[in-house]
Image 1 (tube, each protein chain N blue to C red):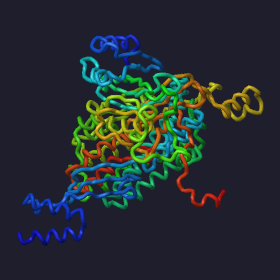
Image 2 (cartoon, helix red, strand yellow):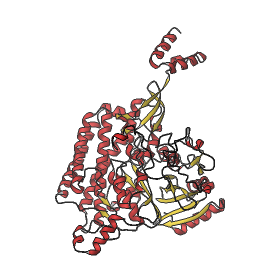
Image 3 (cartoon, each protein chain N blue to C red):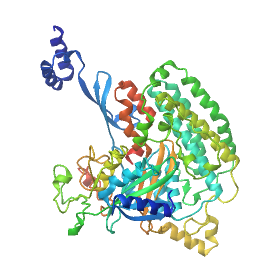
Image 4 (cartoon, rainbow over the protein chains, first blue to last red):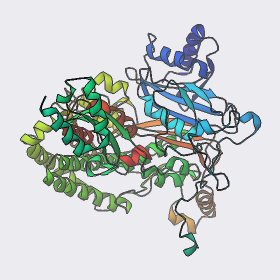
Amino acid sequence: MPDAPGLELIRGEIEQDHPGAVLDTGFEHGCASLAIDPAHVLAVLGWLRDAPGQGYRFLSSLHAADYLPATPRFAVHYELLNRDRVERIRVKALLEDPSSAGGVASGGPRTEAQPPPAGPPEAATGPAAGALPEIDSCVSIFPTAEFQEREAYDFFGIVFNGHPDLTRILLPEDYVGWPQRRDFPVGGEPVTFTYNEHNYG
Amino acid sequence: MASRPRTRERAREIAGDDVRARAGAEEAAPGLAERTEVMTVNIGPHHPATHGVLRLVVDLEGEVVKDLRPIIGYVHTGIEKSCEDKSYWKVIPFVERMDYLSYFFQMEAFCGAVERMIELEIPPRAKYLRTIFLELNRIHSHLVWLGTTALDLGAISMLWYCFRERDRILDLFEMAAGQRMHTRYFQVGGVIEDIPLGFEAKLREFIADMPVRVGQYQDLLDRNEVFLSRTKGTGIVSRERLLELGVTGPLLRAAGEPWDLRKAFDYLAYPEMDFKIPVGTVGDNYDRYRVRVAEMVESTRIVEQALDGLPEGPFIADDRKYVLPPRSELSTSMESLIHHFKLVTEGYRVGPSELYYAIESPRGELGCFVLADGSAKPARVHFRDPSFVNLQAFRDMSVDSYVADMICSLGMLDPILGGVDR
């Protein structure tokens, strides 16, 4: 891992080329992390991958997290690995929730009263309430991100612009809602087979 | 020319309207009639060769795979979401059930991540015991892989031999933990119980037998003409491409990259162990087989060393804020009773932090990301499952090969769909 001063050096070098890209640095439990502006995500990842002396060429894991009630609400985590120096660094792209302005819960769990609208969910929801956070896809520089970005889209509704095939991966294609958001309740899933429910109470 | 109508008619009989429509296109491009139609075939989700509930949509030209799309999610059970509703110690049995062949690894990834977040040092004996069980689990997982993959390739007897040894490992798990699978043996802070009397003798017997057994497996397969011609030179993907796709574990090592988290990072008792990382040269299915078989022998060596060097002392940490007090204290100490009550009802709290902890599972880098918000339940538990990421390489392994080789490659890829879908 780069130590705390090393992390500040990395931050300084990124700031030279991309002012405003790095929002914060964090160092906890021996792990370094860079919080970045999502607009610069490809520039920062590309720099960490290709700049001489960096060489974080392996993307171990890409996952999303929901920090509700904090703002910015979402983050996409990129766990980068330099296999020569055996160093990890986490890049956190912080994403605002575009639908939070109206105070509407955006997870949108499916309820009995609200039958699932026809068609793909992102097309069916309105522009304000259903607006999804967006970030550039890093499949072009890390091909391994393809499945993992689809997973983040599937569960958190984070749109990765430029992804070759951004569809649901683990949930059914016609599923409505983003179930791993913190405001999506556990057990909010209606039971499909209820035709003989009355026999069994 | 005379043969064209007859071919079209036969195709029509076999495949119906779809082919009829394409046959119309042939008139425009003469010469295509001699070629085979591209046919889209669905394999799975319930098919013995898919090693789980995996669906493959394959474009075939004759017997050659032209394109392939794995469709997953059939056994998605929302484990990550369910974990957010459980206190930390109740998450352990949940995450075990993701990849059902490497449950000890899932436990270690989660417990290790939480231990690092609360900065709880585990005692040396617990480190060694965990190492022993992880490596036994690795052998167990590789045995299931070898048995089922050899079965796919027609070597039916391999399944019985592999499952015979696997049963001995499960007996050991049952002896120590009370369960054969999903043991919940690892706890935050150590392991739940010390190994029982007689365990060591039984384990030593197994250690002595295992290299002999591996030799027998190799005798059965290494000069088997059918096995060799089906594995050698098939499913090759270059090392660079594998790294781009994020592939780790035996698949990457078979392509000649000696990358193993047990050597690279410092966790459990691995820094004190003397073992080798088997690597391949070509990166074909045969190398993948050789690497895994060699890993079984290396794992046996690790178990033996860990058993020889097993330190005396406590098997779980002594921090009563996180670890249950011993049963015997409950009837004598009020303080222990309170700790026990607090830990069982609410559980311990973890301060706001986040951590990614990765270990080397039988299939590659198994990472666990835990986000804590200060409460007694994790705000997010995410597993970077190696099967899920490795599956992306399947298209590269199979395109332009025969269907039969694709089945072989899938077996050698060793995806566990419980881990893929979580």
